[in-house]
Amino acid sequence: MSLNLASIVRSSAAKHPDRVAVVIGERRITYRELDGAARRFASALLGLGVEPGKHVALMLPNVPQFVIAYFGAHYAGCPVVPLNVLLTANEVAYHLRDSDAVALVAWEGMLEAARPGFDRVEHCRHLVVAKANPADTSPLTGAHDMTRLIAAASPVEDLPATQPDDTAVILYTSGTTGQPKGAELTHFNLFYNALYSRGKLLDMSAETVALVTLPLFHSFGQTVLQNAVLGSGGTLVLLPRFTPDDAFGLMQAHRVTLFAGVPTMYFALLHHPGAGQYDLGSLRRCVSGGSAMPVEVMKAFDEKYGVNILEGYGLSETSPVASFNQLDRPKKPGSIGLPIEDVEFRLVDDAGKVVTETGVPGEIWIFGPNVMKGYYNKPEANAAALDKGWFKTGDVATRDDDGFYFIVDRKKDMIIRGGFNVYPREVEEVLYAHSAVAEAAVVGVPHERHGEEIKAVIALKPGHHATAEDIIEHCKQSLAAYKYPRIVELRDALPKGPTGKILKRVLRG
Image (spheres, helix red, strand yellow):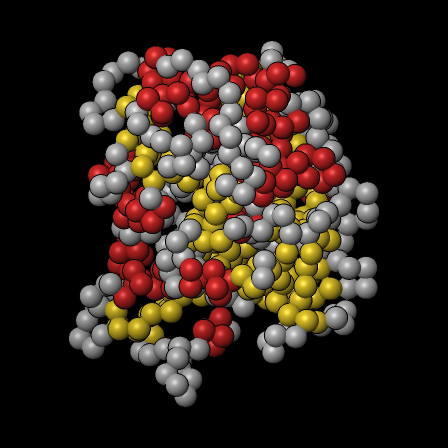
């Protein structure tokens, strides 16, 4: 049996060739045009010498070129490595090197980080630049113009014979060591998750119009929006950068029926002073994920806009949807819902025993067709994270009598800021690189808008001087914008336990 994610656009193009698949600004792209562009981009990749099975990295915002390159790479039989568009040059180089990517497709506005990162990785041989203005014919030095490549290529005839268990996407997720790891998701992992999302989860159809402001490089936007909506024959309305006014304006102008966002977006929309001037009567479905939705925000948004926000839970390693509140059952605010079809949860205590009692916390382990095949080239990490197919999430939850799960804590030190995962160790390594820093610890503190904010607590070396502003500027040079600390506290020394370990629970208060 062969399976390839590009069958999503091939199938919808066959059923709805003239239906609009993607909207951005005044531009409309039909399914026929989208499928044709993806097929030609596949041919262009093969023409450059990119062989099937080789990895193609994408550093693109929410623009049509992301969708074209994503499915085009699959038409070429090449796994995709989506990169966060906020990465610095050093981070780009790490991801390209670690993933063994042989090509990078980058947005022209991100070349300041993408090009030097690309230049540092010898095995990544092809830089393809997507221009904001497709009509721009100005030459590029040491790179290929994506528009010109597509225009000059003949479309591939059909899908490659990839297998369900072949790697389709490598999604990077940070770890407690500070080194990001690439979760290998198969064609079946992602196809199944998108199929469930568009069916039983959200009941999508060809009439679905989704506002896409969640980043497509992230698993949430990629599966629940891009893959699920296109699989249903619906329309993606792209918004590269979220603002409440832009979001409201597009919802009204395009009669948007589906909005998926992280809690910070719902908070911004709920409290936007000009919200009342927009007509959101077409909105039928709202989905929240990425971090816990404050119950009061959910209730207020539901009431104000007459919708029913469904909250769920998942990770990059689970494609990502693992559990959700469901359309056909009353939701429980504050709960991550029930495991989705064919997915199993178990709670495991610190002694390794499965928790069977309701209300008793345990670490969530997940088993099912959504679980990754493993971290790319990370056998030690796989041994720690996977147990006979069960994925250990590091998140602690309880289960009630109805089988609904409630997150109560994280075993890991991960901070979720505005829906993005930030691991303290990565930030701490940058802090320790500052010449004045003797000790450093990074913790998450509650924040009304972002959910959590990043706080660094620092002790300076004797005789050295640095201000909080100096430390923040230092971090900005090496960390993506969502990772650097906004709060810096200077202390004479950091609290430690008997073994000398810094006590972060004391710093959190």
